[in-house]
Length: 313
Ligand code: ATP
Image (tube, rainbow, N blue to C red; front, top):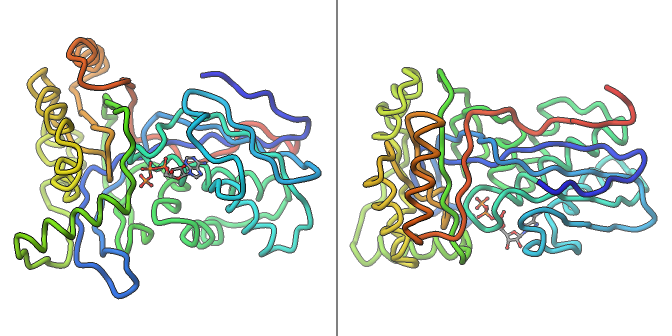
C-alpha cells in the first residue's frame, strides 16, 4: 500500500472493510430504510486515515482507489470530523489524509470505514475521551455500517444494520474478493430489490438471521460457513449486472467453499479453506478474466484503532 505522507502531530487510524456473511432484507420502513438482519465480519482490507490540525478543511487521498473518492465536504471523513467538532464545540479545521485500499462503491463499506476511522482519530487528536457508546451513537448518525466498522470482529446487526449484538464465533476465515470495474450504488440496488419483489408479488417477512449461519460461525468450520452465506440483495445485483452471477458461479466451480455478492455489490466475496486455497482461487479467477482486480484477506479483524499518535496513548 502507498502510504500518504502525514503531517506533524497527526493521528493515524487503521480501519477494516466488512463483508456481510448474511444479509436479510425486510420490508421498507416508513423512514425509507429497509429493516435488516445481518451478520458482519471485519476483514483485512484496510484504509488508513490521518488527521492533523490545518488552517482549512482538506482531504488528501492516496492509495489504490484514491481517484474515486470526493475530496470536498461530501467525503464521509469530513462529515465525521465536522460532526465531532460541532458536537464538542471544537473550533479547528483538519487536514485528513486517506490511504484508500478498500474498494470504492464495492459493497465493502469503504466510506463508512473512513467515517469510523475519523471519529476515532478526532477523539484522540482533540483528547475528548469518548467512550465506545458515545462513539457508536455518533457513528450511527453517519451511516448504518459505521457502528460495526468501529467495533470490528463479527457482529449481528439489526434495525438498519446499526444496532449491534455480539455473536459467538471461532477461528479465522480466508477470503478472496473479486472486484469489478463498475460500482453499484447502494440505493440503486435496494430500488431494484423492491422492484423485483413487487413484480413477483412477494410478501416480505420481518428479517431474521438463520440458525445455520450462527452454528457455522460457532463451529469455526469454513465449509459450513461457505454453505450458509446468504444475501437477499444478490438477485437485485445480478439483475443489474448479470456478469456478477457468472463470476460467482466461476469462483464456486474453481473450488471456493461459497461465493456471495458483498453487501450491495458489485464485489463478490469467496470463502476458501485456507490461505493456500485463496492463492489457487486467485490464480484461476485472474485467468478467467471475469473481474478487474482480486484481493485476499482474512477475518475477523479488529475495528478502527489508532496506530500512530503524538499523544503516545
Ligand atoms: P456500503 O457497503 O456501505 O454500501 P460501498 O462500499 O458500496 O458502501 P463506498 O465505498 O462507501 O461504497 O462509496 C459509496 C459512495 O460514497 C461513493 O460514491 C463515494 O464517492 C462516496 N464517498 C464519500 N466519502 C468516501 C470515502 N471516504 N471513501 C469512499 N467513498 C466515499
